[in-house]
Length: 407
Image (tube, rainbow, N blue to C red; front, side, top):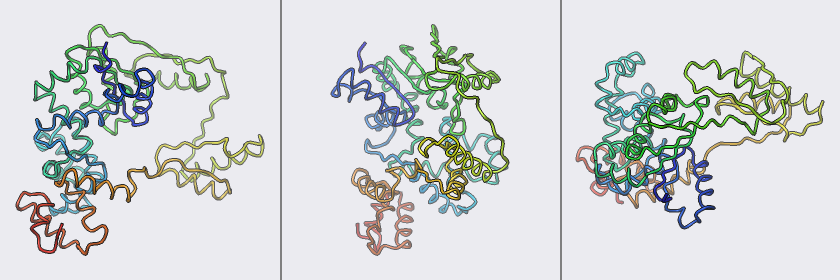
């Protein structure tokens, strides 16, 4: 087996980094650097850089992050004379993202009666129109959003046989981590890539599928044994982290799932303390209960603050915990927050780099056109955007032709 024929995909940059580090220990840094190991989006972006001409893109296309995509949507919504307080960019983005992850394009979206009825009930009937305009604007800007990396990878393999043949024979062995979190687009791409050799290994747990709100479908892992011939299933049921008490509860809960791959979790660890379940009516009560419990355990068992951790599902829940801990004078450290690449100064700097590589990138130009201040106001920028739209040219080109702007 040639290591260069392996494609290894996962969902997070942290997991991808760990995979690469392990491979580097086996092959050495020089060889591992050339392997296709990473997240779905990073690997497909790498492939599309070399194949973009088949899809009508330049190889230096820009990749819009979520903030960029929502900014484009806000512009499109305003240009269509729609109220962005009613058509909130975040809600519209999620709707369009869901469609793309199911390989539904603007035309299919507009022609789907059930989808249109959903939008009508939500009192947002113009989403199909926004969708079409958004896709057109991204293409005009020479940009793809994160979902486009999946959609365009699928289009490349589906509609360009030479590219399909090339990558089917390059990636003879395919490994996917956290397979229960794959969406329809990822599923179809893997089916196409793996069709020639059917050497596909997936790792996952149907009982840990929690990303349906992002478009993930549990059916992908439940149907895997039917998708390929001669499938071998290896059950990894021994747990090395939890106590048996925790696993007993997990087994009882999982057993109630209607569609599942049967399993029985076990461990050589001690039984451990019994799980305590407390039902509270409000988030404030929950915060107070947590703070009181920490205080009680500190006094009774002489624990230190560092012996406690509070886990919550969403960032919005932190407020109740923080207020309760402050009232009890319990110091704490928050983990998470704004990522490095989401900081304003970093996004500004990256925007300059994006313009250098892709002058058609309208969102990057709008971000830095008056930063540092150059005396270019909103009215002037709006006039340049209008000129760009009317003449079907980029904002950069329009800027050179608009009075009041010198780039």
